[in-house]
Length: 568
Ligand code: F6P
Image (cartoon, rainbow, N blue to C red):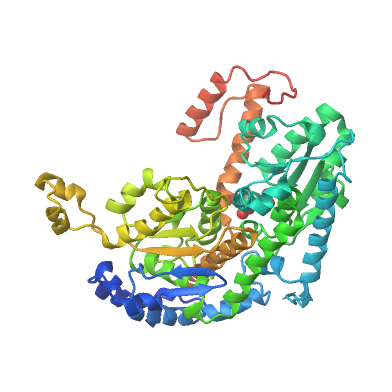
């Protein structure tokens, strides 16, 4: 394939286009009755079992997908990523989040330099700093232990760490290490989020970690200035040095902000924001909360999947299989969405995190060479933990639109409950749903079955389930820090596989820029109207009307320049 030609012009893509018409004639019910097929669609690695037998695919489909992978140069693209080549061509950067969790003695070169020692230098600094804060060797200006942490950041500087924190919160080992400590996340520029974050906390015992790759993100910087004010107002401006630290690639701006560069934790431009949870972005706040040893296990879990992804043959490679079959669902079966359905409350923030990793990475309109794409890329990702989702949007998934689902189950609950006299344990009750739902989607329920149950004729159409709805099932042995790292890396790499096959750049995000620049224009207008009484100008009729109404009705805004912090 010449570099500027599109994957849809290749033989394997066209072959799959024809094949899908054939395959559509076979219901999943029939596919599921072929035990040999199902057996070949179970893959295990490092304790994680993937069952993809409920995909609308047969062995022929898989072979054709491997041909597609070859046409897309998938193997080479994976190697180029691991070799530190500048595969993020629009930003001229390598994509090396795998180096963030590489063992200390490994060698990963970027521009001829092994980056692993730099990674470990920062990890060692985090270990040391977090231990000092946790032990009380590093205290606030009034001598009190900093037991509470607010991590200020947004997007990739927020969602990954929040996911991991939420997942660890009920892990028995992590609980032990988190005794007496709190970790909160301030992301939204909404002052309500500030109020909720500082509610019940005192600056004396709070450490603020400002997390921003660029240190220019408007939301984060305003929130950081707000918390700097919250600290200074209570403890004096000199307290900032003890109560605020930073994580960034831009150490110059960190210093300008007033944070001592010695208290800044670096990362590098070869780490994409949404792929940064294994850098200081996640490792610092999580180590402050759980201790570095727990977080190190998380890194090891991710690293195990990295090694698997880079070396396992495609037929046994979890991220590759998931990625190729996702391309199959989106590009050939025409299903544009994906539901992420963990049967674990601890994974409640998995879907929001994957939403960013996936949609910011693969929601593109042109190829990596800038050629407009005649096919859609990316999925519309959403999800909720089961069984909450079942009582919310599953109706649509069962009888409305077809949405491929990721069912994620865990063998051993973080917090088992057994009640005397109950038929099953609470976790078994949860997992009964995990095992039942994929079959309900795949098999559905026929008119014949309903007639056998004596369902009244008028209700039969309403109670019929067409079935034939695909899903993956992923079974994890437990949900400790290591498993959480594995799960994270499986999704990261699966999304990269999809982008590599579609021929797009999954590592840039130009689509977020336009809204940001328009907001700058509005910000200027609000300032001019409020301070100099200038009329709203330069916007279309609709925005002018709304803006004018907003300005006219916000009567409680103070006239003079002053500081007001939330009253909660
Ligand atoms: O949403 C756009 C984005 O650039 C994300 O990619 C990034 O994770 C987020 O903003 C935050 O950026 P920063 O870490 O530079 O504050």
